[in-house]
Image 1: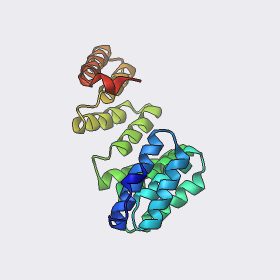
Image 2: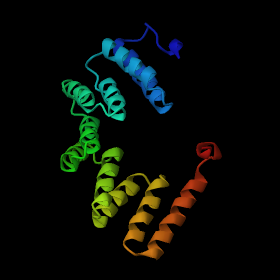
Image 3: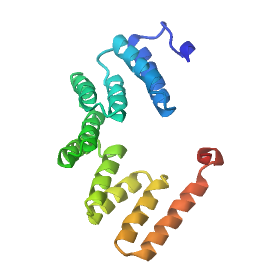
Image 4: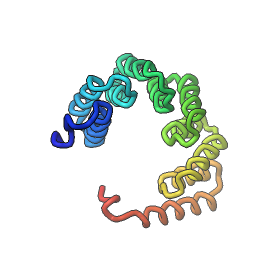
Length: 191
């Protein structure tokens, strides 16, 4: 992947390329390689938030909460009011069991971007854990409205319906999820 990075691009663009590479390494389960890409991106352009958030994700996965939070604070210093910053801080709080704080950060992310998938999904998860099925259903339905192609969402809504005792609705949602899964190319389901 080194040939993608070139001195012919401005530093800001090279930093974005490095962040993309870092995220790819994260998805491949290679956090050490990802960390280096994020570090290099920060050296090139310390004003961008994404490399700090990438490092925060790595530290969070290692349960290094203070290090993760330090990266989030660095991202905040960039002056950008990026909803992903608030989501990341919520995820750190959530991982430490501070659900009320996490909820506040997730809601701040949604206030900045009501389509922020991860924040809304995290809130739905909190509601499910608290047995607030009405809240979970509302969040999942809002997500499904914005992401109608996602087969995961009707399945989650089926779980909520089943917990509510609505077997008919649960079955309908499972069928809906299957229809969406069937539309995916086989290569997308090769796990």
